[in-house]
Length: 164
Image 1 (cartoon, one colour):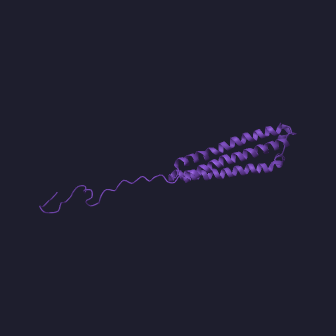
Image 2 (tube, helix red, strand yellow):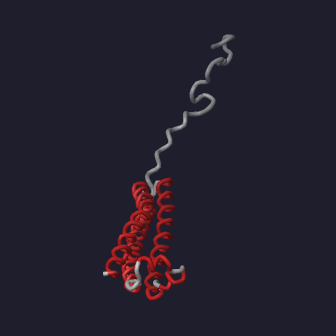
Image 3 (cartoon, helix red, strand yellow):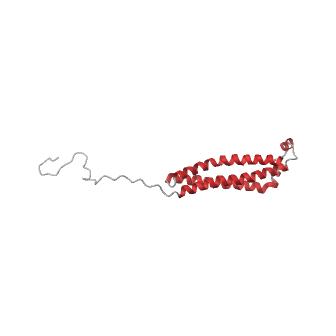
């Protein structure tokens, strides 16, 4: 649009692309997925935490329950009801080493599970093994249920084996 012949053009609308602002910005390239090592590590920690803690606690829990039941065999259910807290704990005294190993399995599984959960979430957010991170989060979240069921069944089976 020229107002006077020979005068420079005056624009009253949207400026032309490239005239005053340069070329339009290029589309941002999608960054490729990062290294999958974090997701792999999270999944391995979750698996070791669930499997290792469950196997350790279930095997020692079975043996501890069987040993405690063998010591309580001479007692009737009525006598068990009248025992004090200290007397009940004395039934576990001969198997305290096994109980300690079951507790070590519990705490080791807890630490590994929490670490796997955190690392899995970081892997998901930072795209460093997203699928593996999701799997690690699921395994770490389901792990306590698996642990509780298997160790509970093992302890009940140990009580039955020790009482027979």
